[in-house]
Image (cartoon, rainbow, N blue to C red; front, side, top):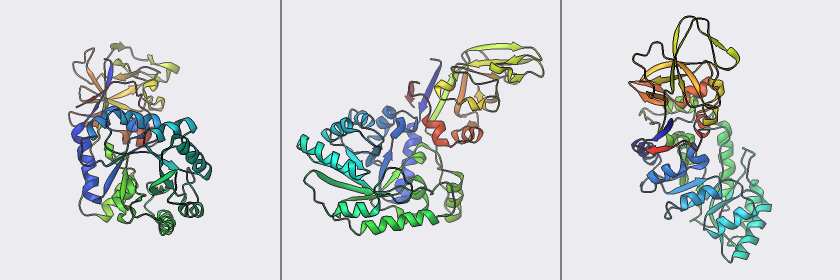
Length: 372
């Protein structure tokens, strides 16, 4: 195959274990967006037997069904919005769902009544992110209705708006204070309380509550440079995350290019001397961003080599003039480590002006993935 992805079992195990040891709490493993681009099937296959995962969190009922087909022991919470058809399916399958609005409350009640079963719900408190979520006063009013004949209250939660991109926790503390005010009205001690993301799980024990939600760092990346810096400031003990995903391709063609020749669309790169290039059969359709044109690098047989010309839909070109003995079919590492050299999602994110989350989540789900 011309390109594939490898998912490292040991690295995922290591990262999840870090959070168990730090928080001493249950872990809700966030596997939405095709497990942050890693491959939902492969990640579930590894994690379903791990003692470090107690819950799964996804965005949609289709993701929940995919998990359900592979394991039926651990509960699944759907964090995203669902339409009536999706609500019917998730309630029928016993998945847990967010209640983000008063309109959704009534809809869920009606569907649960028709199905003659209780819907398993988590109330989401709007504390400052202004996405899905109920204002604190509306949550308190709803809580007075429990126990409810159609709804079983499984959890209550919120989400931080400014916990990663700053070393100033002021806004996060304001959100936490709002959350704690609402918790005084929660009727059942068995209701799961959760707020903590990867960043807050690393920095603020007061956010842990009953279970911590872990996303990006389970896959081997710090949520941000600021999170890393603040962690080092607050803790003497260093921790390390190990990237779970590596992305590889093969050299499809080798060309000798004359001095002054253009490479790729738009003639955006011209050679200053005679060069040797390879064509890599991966492009922006596969998730390799077009903004990486002329500025990124890959590893060719363990040697860093620069991307030349614009990234195309299904291929890009690389200067391998300095790489010895390159042959068609040789390994090209797009993300990963080889021969003590490394290309990671943080590096590509910095080049494209985005975050490591996006670099990973946008990798085409059709690329074959293998557990190693």
